[in-house]
Image (cartoon, rainbow, N blue to C red; front, top):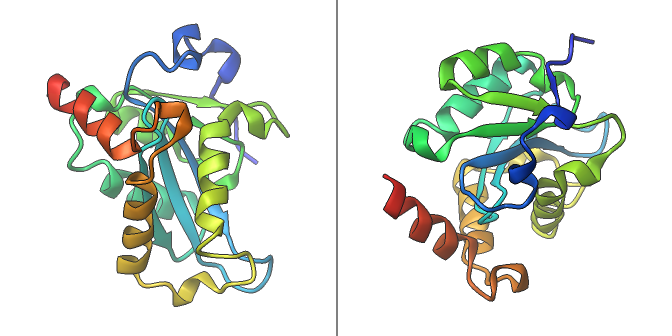
Amino acid sequence: KFNIGKSIKNRPKDIRKRESIGHWELDTVVSSRGKSKACLSTFVERKSRYLIAQVMDNRKSTTFNLHCFKAFEHISNKLIKTFTVDRGKEFAGYNEIEKRLNIDVYFADPYSSWQRGTNENTNGLLREYFPKKQDLTEIKPSLIRDKALILNQRPRKCLNWKSPFEVYFNISLHLT
């Protein structure tokens, strides 16, 4: 256990409305318990539903932080405003993330997955390619990138039939 940082209750209300880009939900996707220590790290932008996903060797907070910094190394600071996470052990190093990226990390309430519904839904879409029974150590990084690209190019009803890629890059190109 670790001391939880900022509660989602203190997150600015406009984030819930998805009016601006740069607010991300983070999570990990694990294979069936006990089968593998490997997991996927997922980062989903709330407004556009744009996904970044990577294979991680384990769920240690130090490993997660390294993957987080790698995921956002080529993204403008203007497009990284807040992160919302659950209370998993992989987020215990959130202080380092806040300092290094100069953002706020908000924690959802326990057993309240709907508070990070964008990420939970996207993880469900990833499960179409990587079922729970699959050993995630077998996944090549190029395969997870390919599947993320497919999901980022899939038109979504909630985006007026635009793809996450179209929404994210149309907005972000104007902000950079």
